[in-house]
Length: 410
Image (tube, helix red, strand yellow):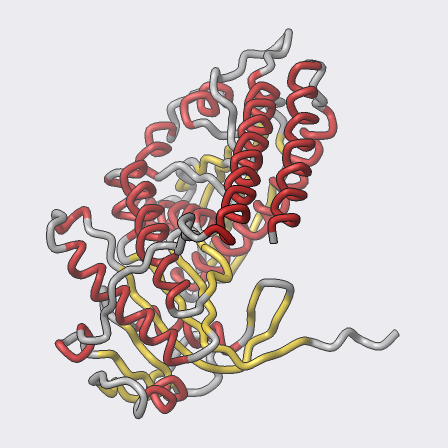
């Protein structure tokens, strides 16, 4: 059978990442997440719509975006950074959310709604090179906007970047008055003019459709929450439903002969937490919430109840004779069973490279394992409550009704 052909296209790619996200989360997890979500809904999303961009995916504190034009991508980046600078002026410095941004135009691989390839990788490397509140462009992006946007650029020269086969020529946008002159008001989503008779019927139908859809979602949520709160005869659950893909990463034990090597085991723990927190489907409590469980002998069910998680990952790190051994195991709190475990043996030539490799590998395997374990939990725990089941059926019917009304109103 012939191998499926890879679909490619030329795209303008923007990668944004929060500066000091781990520090912000460690200081105020709830406040940081709330502020970040507000920034995305109040600034990123309307500006993206204004410049015809789309969010390809969120990666914890990071964001991958695509634009039909490199000019649109650069304008978006500059406008957002200037708006963020104004917004942060009234916020204490240690609470400010600042972004680095990288913009590139190049060839990307298309897989459904996702994008991969060098075009994306280069944008990610550019983002890492940007100053907080800054924007870095590739040479190809610079060439496209040079005669179309009146902005000043600083040539940072040719730079070697991780996993990029050639040197990158990097240009930083100067955030001066020229950059600020690109700013335009944030545009709210447009609404239908109800004063015009031809539009009134459509608007009313859409309002009804969205109202019905909202009721459907509410009904489904009520049913779902009720399902997760159903108590077992032989178990004690938290009074709140647990997030399906939720894991607490406990501090990895330092098993090396030298107790000073604890910095490395702490680094591995932080690396795994960072990799997992970048994945939108995962809930990972911050390290300040899990450190207190190190060597405390607290039971799994108590950890799950206090942190609102369904899984716990812990392990150990041992260094000796130029080698490092790291073990990790994943426990399902409800059953108390070990659902995954792995041991890594690596030469200790570069501790940071080893830490990065192992953290990424564990994170990738862990996500797959959690998805599989969640599937098994869902299969073995059907609800026996007919009221919850009836609410789900009502919700489905309302969704179908809302979809029909929306289609008829077009």
